[in-house]
Amino acid sequence: MAPANPAHQDESIAMGDWRRLFLAFSPTGEPYTTKGDILSILSKNGIHKKDTRIQDLIEALEAYTPKEPIDFETFRSLAGRHVYLLQRAAQGGFIIPDFSGFTDHIAQIYQDLVSINTGDVARYIPQLARVDPKYLGISVCTVDGQTFDIGDTDVGFCVQSTCKPVTYCIALEDVGEDKVHAHVGREPSGQNFNAITLNSKNLPHNPMINAGSMVCASLIRPQQPLADRFDAILSVWQRLCGGVRPGFNSAVYHSEKETADRNFALAYFLKEVGAFPSGTDIHQTLDLYFQCCSIEVTTKAMATLAATFAGAGVCPMTGERVLSPESVKHGLSLMLSCGMYNFSGEFAFTVGLPAKSGISGVIMLVVPGVMGITIWSPRLDPLGNSVRGVAFCEKLVSLYNFHNFDGVGPASEKTDPRLQAHQEKRYLALSLILASSQGDLDEVKRLMARGASPDIPDYDGRTALHLAAAEGRQEVARYLCRLGANLDVRDRFGRTPREEAAASGITL
Ligand code: GLU
Image (tube, rainbow, N blue to C red; front, side):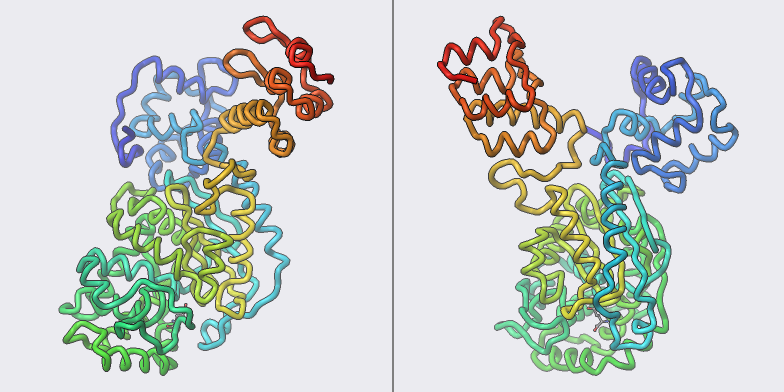
């Protein structure tokens, strides 16, 4: 089994594997590589020079010019503890093997989004109203730490409601599921995120709305001074973000606090009905809640956080388990059902992925087991979600089979970026053979449209046309012939599709 944090462990591999690895980094197959080749293969895989995991390798490579030959022994000593990472890069062994192909699509979606100018920035506090509506940043981080950033990915923004899944998970880790859910439900509310409404047990509907998040905040280290409580939360954020310490927007915090009549009203209402644990100081709780909303990050940092959720609590950049798989599972479940304000049901239906939206225009999107994506664009739709952010998510799942239920039923026509290119080809070819033998012309057409090759045979050397002809599937056989399938190729029993057609009595 692969070690939890491959890049940080010594790995002893056989000499033959070392040689193969070395040659995979050689530009010509001759026994040498170069710094340029090593960096370019890594970067095609989304492992960049700034990746904290490989800083010692990057420093060691500084001694070389880009094209200077590096021999086998030098390569071995340079690779050192990174051998496992290099091996996965060379073998296409990361979760997204064709990472540059995948990110080309993300860049294309980004370009399409730039021209969307509908929606408006949040205006309930001046600090948000002043944000430039033109900002657009998209960052991707896979569970293997492959990263891609495009647009305004270094500009800080407030996390706002995207703090809610984190606050919830910290509360789960601190006091356990039973205690947390003795104070907050797990149903969508069907109401605005700041609505003064409770469920039938007089509890907030779920932890993804203001009331629920306040209750979760109240459960985190209530006996400690406020500063320590916030510090503890911030340090979890830092670990979720791969070591990047998030900022804090003091102006937003003060502004939130000064204009928070609704949140105060909510907190008093919760107090009145006994929703908080006994002894809760609601002013401190509100303060902690405002502080969490005012945490500032970049899309880059938040994509790492989302990838940590995608990786069931293990941060891909440090290999550290920050949250338990159970807490993350609960967090993702509630993001799926309640994470996108009053659009949550629609989003779960169309996009089918857990996500959390914040009024600053950020969406943290999780493809479980695969990657985290953060999109930040401040223009909001009437429900409070980023217009371009939602458009991004919809486009993404129209291209890739990431929707929760894309795997249900017949093979989806969308691409699976987790497959290596050759696996995808093989999968298409075998599906084509099966569909042809069943005479399913529609499916054959779809598979051909996706690039299936009619001449890739199965292990008996039989092609789609062999099978269509042998089974008497005249329509499919004719269609394949018209698209150039070979009538005279022999399978391992020596038979051709032409002979099969004659035997089953179909005319081509
Ligand atoms: N700070 C905002 C509030 O409590 C959060 C808004 C949001 O992102 O949903 O009202």
